[in-house]
Length: 119
Image (cartoon, rainbow, N blue to C red; front, side, top):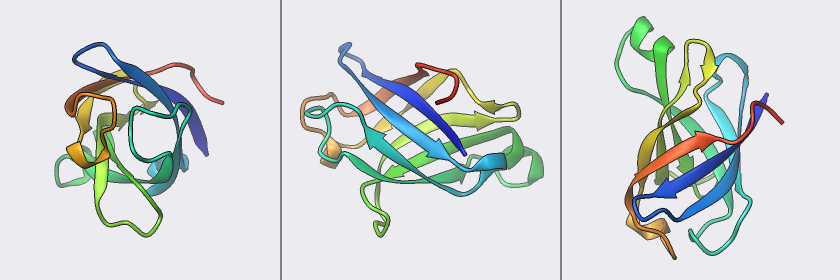
């Protein structure tokens, strides 16, 4: 299990932190928890991988993660692009935060960055 603190920032410079836990070797499921309240509507949920391209090399070299509001939910509200790569979790990237999740944060384009290497 890999667990990291990730900082999420919008285009206006607002930020909040979450933890992201994922299984070894690209396991398809994990979880996330917010370390701060007030920026987004939800405080925890499940994480699933999303392959950017089809085929072995596309899914092996670059995987996005989708953050859901509960283990049962089928609708994700945040996407962290290129979170997992060939060598493991990447240091930073871009993504999206969708309007239904927003409280005090600018929706749509976000950036993310690892705040640690592993908890």
